[in-house]
Image (cartoon, rainbow, N blue to C red; front, side):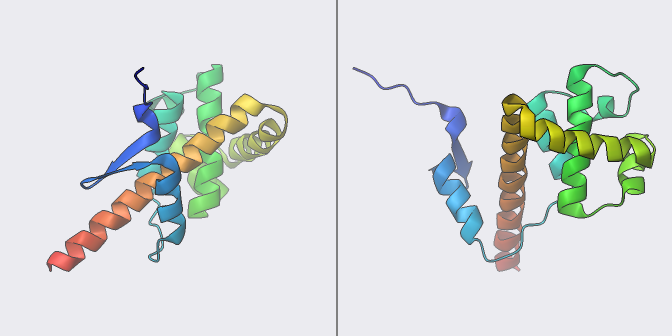
Length: 144
C-alpha cells in the first residue's frame, strides 16, 4: 500500500526538505531577527488568498478583495508598524478605511474560523518567506 504525501506541507531550504513543523521550529530558534518587508507580506496574502496585490488598490468590494485588504492592513500594522496613513497610501485608501480593515480583521478572527485559518496561513507564509530571505543573507555574508 502506497502512502500519499502532501507536498504542500514540505518546504525546500537549500538542499534540505523539511516538514512544516520542522521548518517552524527552525524559524522559532533562528538567532538572527527576521527581516519582514512589504513585498513579503503582499506576496503571502496573494498566495494564500489568490488575489494579486494590484487588485488590492481597486475600489472593488468583492469578498475576496475585502478580505485581502483586511489581512494586508493588519499584517502591515503588526509586523512593520506602519501608520494608518502609510498603509492607506499603499492601498489607495484613507486612514479611516484602514481602521475599519483592522477592526474587522480582529472581529472576523474571533467569529469566523475559516477567516482565522487563512490569517494563520498568511502569518506562516510571512515567517517562512522572511526566514528564507534571512538564510540567503547569511549564506551571502559567508561568501564575502
